[in-house]
Every structure is written in C-alpha cells, then in structure tokens.
Length: 127
Image (cartoon, rainbow, N blue to C red; front, side):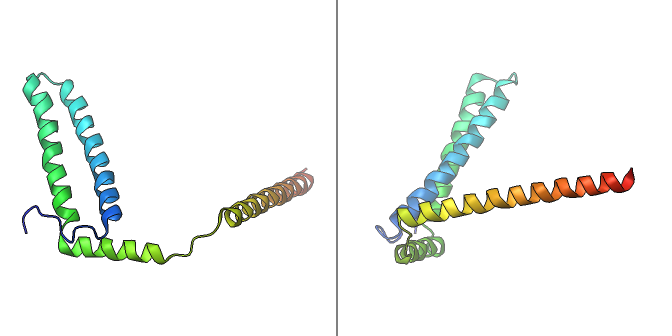
C-alpha cells in the first residue's frame, strides 16, 4: 500500500482530527526531549536533530496508521455513526444544565445540614 491515502474522502474529518491530536502529543513529547537534551553537553546538531528526526519519523508513523485499512475503516464507520446521532438543541442543553446545577446545589445543602446535625448530636452525646 505504501504511503497512499486509503479511501480518500471517506472519514476525512475523523482521520484529520485523530492525526492532528496524535501530532500534538508527538510534538509536545519531542519538545520535552529537546528541553532535556539542552541540559546535556551534547552538540547543537544532536540537541536539535534528534527531536526533529523523531518528530518526522513519528509523523510518518501516524500518517501510515490512520491510513491502514483496518483503522481507516473503523474511523469511516465512526464518522458515519456520528452523522446519525440526534443532537440536542441549545435550549434543551441549557435547561438540562440548569436542572443539574440546581440538583447539585440542593444536594450540597442537604448534605451540609445533615453533617451539621450529626456533628451536634455527637457533640451532645460525647460531652
């Protein structure tokens, strides 16, 4: 298969986002390696080219992985399923969020009152 794009155009956003996320993680790791190598007495070429070469190698690996037929077919199917999802409206999300916040607040108050009641009871029993 080589480095060609498997089923070009299908699952595009899923593959691009996955590859971008992996590239960010790889880039952060190579940046950290560069920082660690700066503390050594190695030459400037080693300090810069090792992280850069590793980033290029891992980027090619990521490109190869997202274009493997088994992984690409999974991502294509996942993107197809996500298009079938019935997403809630903005109003439904706002109302649901408000209800959750109110229930959490009420539960916190009830647990606080219960805790204070038990503290009073135990202080009375132990004194």
